[in-house]
Every structure is written in C-alpha cells, then in structure tokens.
Length: 275
Length: 275
Image 1: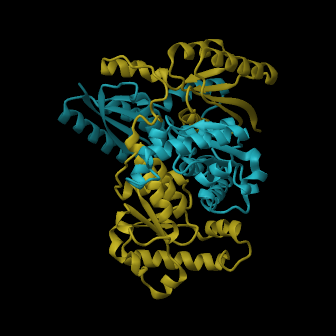
Image 2 (image 1 turned 60 degrees about the vertical axis):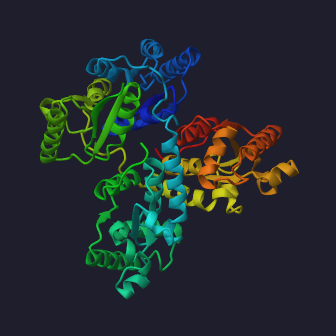
Image 3 (image 1 turned 120 degrees about the vertical axis):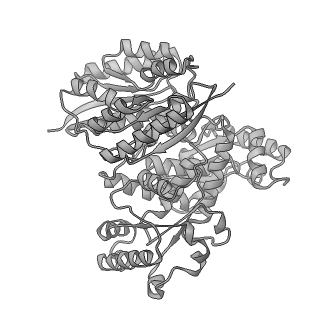
C-alpha cells in the first residue's frame, strides 16, 4: 500500500544537486509515493520565508510532514529554513562544510552557485564545441572530420547512440560521433569502409531485442523495421560483427543514458573536458 | 598560493551524484587546486579493497590526505571504505538514510543504482522522444509539428538555444524547439511568420554582446558575423523586438547550460516528464 508524502528540493541555484541526491535517497523507500516539488533560486530572506510558509501550509493541509532536501549555501538562510519548517529538512550542503573546513584548515567562501556557473568559460566552449560536433556527426551524418572524434559509437538503429553522444558532449565536453550499423553491413560481414581508419575509437552499443522492438514500435508501429524477428536478426548480426572485429561493447538494455555515457567514458578512458 | 589536494568521487554506480555534490562543495574552497578522479561501479568487496589501496598509495606518495566523496549505497562496503582509507571520507548517502528511516518508520532497501536506472521505462521513452524532437526542431530546421513543442526558444545565433533545448530534452524529457532571430527579422520589425501561431510558447534568450562576440569568434574568427559591432547591433535589435512583442526573456551571459534550462523550465512552468 503506497503512502503519499510530499517532498521539496530547494536550492539557491538550480536545485539540480538537491534533486539528484534526494531522488537517489528516495528510491530506497519503495512503498512511498513521492509528490515532488522543486523550488530553485531561493536566494533572499523573503524567498526563504515564502518557502517556509508554503511547506508549512502543505504540512497542515496534508496532515503529514514533508521532506525537504536543501542545498542552500548561505548558512543563515539554511538555518532559518531548518528551524522554521514543519518538515524533515535534510541539508545536503552544511553538513559536509564543517568537516571540510577542519580538514583543509580553511574557511569556505559560503558563496552560492559556483559549481554550475560559467566562471570557467573554457569548459563552456568545450561543451558547445562538443555539442556542435555530436550534432554534425549524428547517425553517420558527416564522415569527414571523424579523426577529431574522441569516440565513435556504433550499433543498430535505436540502441541508444544519439542520446549517449549528446550526453557525452553536454556533460563531459567529449566529442562523440555515432554511426549506425545496418543490414547492408551485416550482409557484407564488415564494418563500413568509412570507419576502418578509426577502428581504435569505435565503441559498440548492444541491446536486448525485446527492448529494441519496444523502442522501434514507438517510432514506426507495425513496421518490418520494428518487428521482433528483424530486431533479433539485427542485434545478433551486429554482436557477431563487433565481436569478430574486436570492438568493445556495452549492453545498454538495463542502463539509463547517464549510465551508458559514464560507462563508455570510463571503459574507453575518454578525457573529460567539462565537469 | 594554490595548494594541491587529490579528491576521489566514488560510487557503486555512475558517480554522477557524488561528483555533482562534491564539486559544489569543493568550489567553496578557492585556494585549493583539486586533482579529481572519478571511480564508478565500486560494487564488490574486491573493488572496495582495490580502491582503498589506490587511495592509500596516493596519500603516502603525495604526503597528504585525499578527500573521498562516496555515494556507495551498500552499508558494509561504505563502512569498510571509511574505516580503512587514509583520507577524509565523506559519505553522501549513509548520513541521510538514518534520519529518513526514522521519519518514514521504514527500512530502506539499500539497493544500489535505482535513481538512474531505467526501471521507469516510460521516462526513458519521454527523453528519447524529446531528444528526437529537439534535434528535428533545432535552429528552425522544421516548422511543421511546432504545435507539439512545449517551449520554443528564440534569440540570435549562438546565444545558447541549442544546448538549452538538448538539455531540456535529455534531463527533463521536455520537447523544446529553437528558432533563430536574424537581421532579416529585425529589419521587418516582426517575429518570423511561422512563429506567430505559437506566440504563447516563445521564450527569448539574450546575451551580453561581448560574450556573444567571444563565442562567435570561436566559430568564425574575424568574420563580420562575429564582429563586436554586429553582435551589439543584433543583441540590441533582438531585445527590442522581444520586448515589443512581450516575449519573456532570460539573459544567459553568466549562466551555465543547466542554469539556463532550469530557469526557463521554472519560469515557463514547463512540465517535466523525466527526473
């Protein structure tokens, strides 16, 4: 029986960190149905007060204590929030600052929003450049300039190449191309000629045929392309080709886009140019 | 004088959460130069032991205590790591589990990797669909089907529209189109005709001309397109047009891609379909 419980992710900036850690904690409690609200940009005493009021009103109305994940950097605002809300407030930031200050024998600057800021313009350019590259080299679109790729993802259509390339570019500033392997390549029993000079950069993505079938059905329902027989055939041939060519491979079936990108980056020892 | 200090982000899954919170804490200490290492997929006793050895060897060699940010969910592995490393180990996960268990009067499942997993296949489809949409509607590429967009970003070339659209799609599953505003539109003194039926979905991105100039110079150095005079002209005309048309606007100059996307999503009250 699922219990409902309201949860707030609050931050003086985007709230992305609070959401990410908060969600990863919440998924540990399976029988609770979470009602999520993210409130970013809590960066003044007035906004803290409005937030306290909003949380307390909800607590009174629902007759249950909300959970609040906060990553507010300002100490005074954070304390005020913690003290005045009728909620379990978990402060993801303050709790680690004291041990870090002791370890480093230094005071922290208690300044908000440094981590996602563009103080580091260099990283911004890297990300933009990588995104432009990933878009130009999506789905085998451009074959010139492939030597600038740091990794070239290969696999059957809809196995996760495009979102992975974009994630690698956006999050890590890595120039990732992707190139589809098609029934023609399987009939030839060889990698596309264009890819031959870049063999060392190839990384294969595979997928369970049932899942591929489900994904392709979303795109072209009832087509031969999406049929389970064709998905089984393509995946089998693709794996066979990649194995024969000695290309490293990752099964994406049970992985999220973040996990595929991180695993590829780790296994292929790619060099991140943004954090 | 910058001091160097090694820092590890370790996790039983991708390490993304540990990196994100860890980096946001580290940027509070400005005079330290961090040497970052991310070690994902620490999911067995053997890997924990190898990690402990790696950290301790580095500590001995560099004669300073590394900082370890861990988001390992398994309690026993996490304790082992904390006990045996010559480092300041900050456990981002365990510290919040106990108060949550008390509040919810429930035991957590202590199972790794739920948050980024694809248990929720529905969200995966939403993200994939949104990415396909963002790519098809990048830079005004497709004008049909615009009614399916949840937001249409407008602004001058290189103000941040493309990365923001992709981020909205990848992270939040939001269908975002983007459409460039050009000197032709400014000469007409009107929005492109294609956009007229979708006025309520438009969101303007603006940028400081100096920064735009720097970004465009990366792309086409020395061109009239990138010149500071032209950048000033385009930005001024664009802001004037958007103001006259009553389109909401965000200055992207000092913001990261995450911040632009989160702010647009918050202000335009977009509905997230992935978390």
